[in-house]
Length: 219
Image (cartoon, rainbow, N blue to C red; front, top):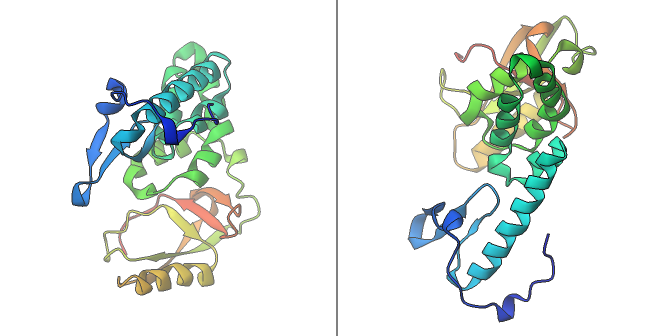
């Protein structure tokens, strides 16, 4: 990747078509580049920088794919596109002769992509399809009791919560509910008891005793 670019002396060039085609518009006339290799606020004077970043990133992504370096391939994509990159890898290896390779990609990368992701509820069905293929031995649920009490701090109205991130810590769920209150939203704590086998993943990587759960949306 090019880390020695003098942004005070950039040539004035046109934005590459690949990036121009990914332009989106926000409030107040602000524009964004929302490409899988470049995801940033757009300033025309920086076209040369965006173009260089795109070319550097594309080269690195192509090399990672050619070398089968799947974690590097996924995380070289910009954050909003990493789940998409994982799904693409799984799909491309999901032929009958390569089925085990697709499962191996899920085992190797799903946890890290999940931990890194934002707006999990948006792709609820995609996450569930991937977690359904994660073997039980890789769900890290062995330490949970047979019956697990899960909590979730949310601002969603009753019956409309599509979230998949829960916790075994009532205190942590209350923290999230209080955060919604601070932002002027109706934060509340949900609580459900589930079978351990219904938990798709347990992780304490963020210190949140987090459980991935795809159960009923009501309540």
